[in-house]
Structures are given as structure tokens and as C-alpha cells.
Amino acid sequence: MSYQISNHKKRSTSRRLANGVVLTLSSIALLAVIAPSIWIVFQILHKALPHFGLSVLTKSGVGLDGGLKNEIIGTAVISIGVVIVAGSIGILSGIYLAQYAKGRFASILRAASDILAGIPSIVLGYVGYSALVVGFHWGFSLGAGVITLSVLVMPYIAKTTEVALRQVPINYIEGAEALGFKPTRILSRITLKTALPGITTGLIVAMAISVGETAPLLYTAGYSQNLPKLTITHSPLGYLTYAVWTFYNQPNKTALQLSYDAGMVIMVLILLLIGISRIIVAQTQRHAETRR
Image (cartoon, rainbow, N blue to C red; front, top):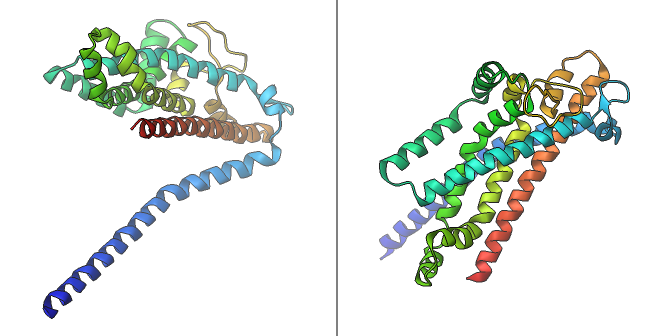
């Protein structure tokens, strides 16, 4: 009896030791992930806040009273275009993968989507330049930039849409079928409505990715300090990531400061989008628990 108690104590001690080691390693790994992010945020705020003013948001140009108004508007126009193009195609692709694709063909489609998601953005930018800017003679333009970024984020939207649709409780669908609903009506009134928060989260994350991309836009959208033109071709426009990249390398102190301001604006926009997606997920889970 005493021998069994001794073995039990030894096992309990070893388990506590193992749990402590795992907890310590996990905490170190988490710190290794968070620390660089905190350092980046601190450095951007430290460089941008002392000289940041309202003129940065309301004026344009790189002069003494310059600002990022045109770049902010250009970023917003590109993001809206990406949501329209990539959102419509990505959501339809996710619906097809979740509801209609079967067997080996579905596996091939998912593998192709994963491969597309793994292609470096600069490679997609070069392909967009070769096909749209040069091949179709669009020039540096809004259309070329939006289509290239849409190809970049489309796999993420398709994947989140497919996952959200597959997480819809089967009881909802079986109940609708028992009531005699047609498949299209079940999809539009039951499945999509239930999966809408997850789909919306995917769209917001895709928008955040498009806000922070630079390489594809350098190849396709070019750059202009003028207000963006709402034309598809031959319409270069400004965007915030270009301001971060090129203003930083200029000897002008005002341009250098604007690069820090642009970095802070991008960071705030991305944090806002991520925060909105987290709120949507939290509200969805809360309503789901309430219904249960």
C-alpha cells in the first residue's frame, strides 16, 4: 500500500514538473511572438506622434505643410475595390467548395487554392505587371492593382467562407429540408445567414492584408501624388505603403516624418480591422451560447 502511494506521489510530482516546463516554454514562445510586435508599435508611435497633426490627414504633398490625404484616399479606394472583386469571387468559390464540390475534383481545387495562397506577393505583382500593365496595355492603374491584390487575398476569403459554411449546424439544414425548403432557399436563408459573421471576418482580414501590401502595387498601380481617378486603366494612384517605402529614403526631413506618419496610419487601420473582426467573432459566439 505504501509502495503504491509512493509511486502515485512520484507520478504526481513528474506531472507537475512536466506541466511547469511546458508552461514555461509556452510563455517564452508567446513572449518571442509578442515582443517584436510591441517593439514595432512603440517605435512607430515614438517616431510619429511628436510631430503628428491633423494636416497629415487633410493635406497632400511632401512640402512643409504636406500630408497623406491622397495616399489615404487611394488606400481606401484600393481596399474597397479588393473587397468587391475578391469578396464576390472568393465567397462564391467558398460556397462551391462547401456545398457542391465533391471527391477528387474538390481536393484538386483546395490544393490549387492553397498553392495560390502560398505564392509570394511580389511574384503576383510581377505577373500582374506582365499581364495587365504590359500585356493588356492598361498601364499603371487602379484596375491592375485591384485585380492583383484580389488574386492575392481570394484564397483566404474562399477558405474562411468554406469553413464558416461547414460549421453551420446540420440540424438547421435538416429542419429546413423537412419543411420542404428548396436547396437554393436553404442556402440563402439558412446557411449563408448563419455563416455570415465568419464570412464577414474573412472579408475584413482580406482588407487588412490589402492595406499592408506594397510589392504588388509597385508593379501594377505605380504612384501618383494626385487624387485617385475612378478609372480602370491608365490611372496611377498613391497609397500609404508607398509613402512608407519611398519617403523614408528621401533626404528631406518632412518626407521622413511623413513616412513615419504613414506607418502609424497603416498600423491603426490594420488594428481597427482586426479589432472589428474579433468583435464580430465574440458577438457571434455569445449569441450562439445564448441560443443553446
